Length: 404
Image (cartoon, rainbow, N blue to C red):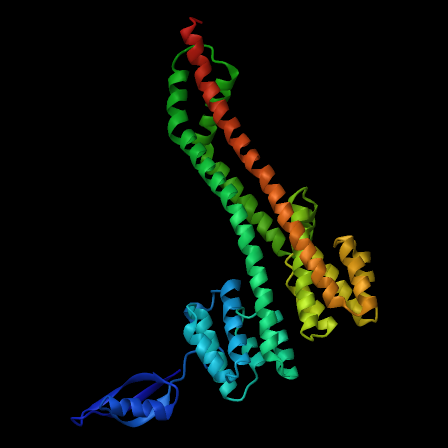
């Protein structure tokens, strides 16, 4: 459905104007006449995004992977049913609930109707459609298999959305516990502990060391909280500024990979993401070098990204991908071994997909194990702090009751 602006005369001869939607000029003109309006001028409106630009109010927003996957699945289904590309884009733009995606698809449809290619129109939409999406659509257009390419894209995006959803669901409980625990401790040290410590301090008796430590900590927090907050803010700003540099980002990403539990989890997730992305691109007909460049750009860790950049140079010079991955000693050894087998057998994309499935399974197990360790640690930490506060308060009371 398209939106049209009209000017015309009503049954009484008065001038009227407005907007109306319809599948085409003739259908809209007929619809207006049925409403008693005789159009004198009728033309299709030009949306704000005609030139591939998203309205300013939407530019800083992003489309969730699940929403993009749903729209891609709809496009693939409609194209497979024989619907033309422009009608497919119009239908999906009308059905989606995401305003930014609707505007983007409307802009893409306008460019396609003006004779542009779909992948060029997608490239004009900024951060909405990733390079992976655009490259696969380009290959699908050139090979005449756009519907099947979009099906594979939808499968890929839905899988990534499922992984993110599982991670978010797994982290929900620990995050909730941390927030609630922090709130409880803030309440204790802000409202409860200061009143009790003042009372204990006024008792003019020799206080046990836990009580003295609690009083000192309360006085420091009450009198110097602004300095503590300033130090934390300054340290955070300095760290972010250091990470903004190339050397700083490389060093901090290297440290993240060496962390005992998080480092292994991060490496497993990145390896699975890289392997599945590369396999999907190769299966869609994207050349190996371009597929590696796109897959490497999706890696947020600078150490892993640098390893892929080095591998791209090696492949460009005629080297082996498996040998370069093995020499980098960054990715797990299994990735290089399976890649070597895939290169020899000519089934690289199939082997990479198996690697992705293996590491996705290991990622799930690693998250489960990390949460199994994290939850009792949070409870233990909260119990230790609260127990220390209770002990520091009760010890002087016991002394008084025993006549000391």
